[in-house]
Image 1 (cartoon, one colour):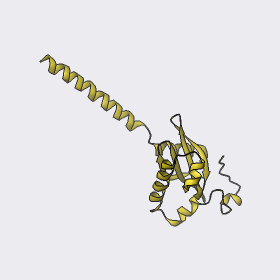
Image 2 (cartoon, rainbow, N blue to C red):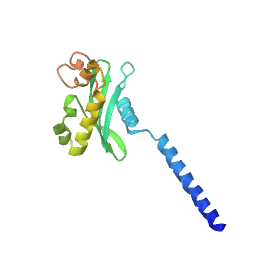
Image 3 (tube, rainbow, N blue to C red):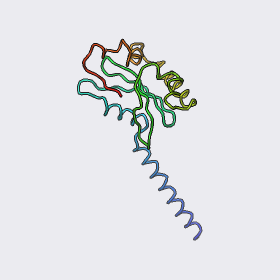
Image 4 (cartoon, rainbow, N blue to C red):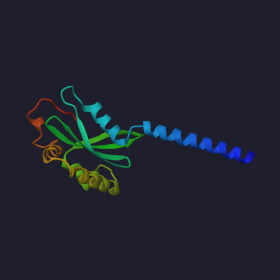
Length: 152
């Protein structure tokens, strides 16, 4: 009988540990939620909230499509010390392997990001896709608008 009690005790401890780990994981924001929060906290304005979607994540790298009013683009993010940071903003060039490679992203991650975005963008309306292509181009509304979306 004593052996059964020891095993039951171990089982209970293991079950509690598993449930605690699952609860902590459920409370932790997903990578996509963290990325949306970083972009929003950096660029939201009272009259122009940034909508960030879709987001492709591969290990410690991400590319997020965004729209803010009549502007749009893409953000390249890297996870550093467990926190997502914006590394660069751009347009369609952030969907090219050469650009991602130049930014220090391994080829396998770059291809994964490109594939994820291509799949996610298939279901989006053409007008929204067009906005993602604008940032930093001559068609970017910032050229005629004084409300800059500052990206470093």
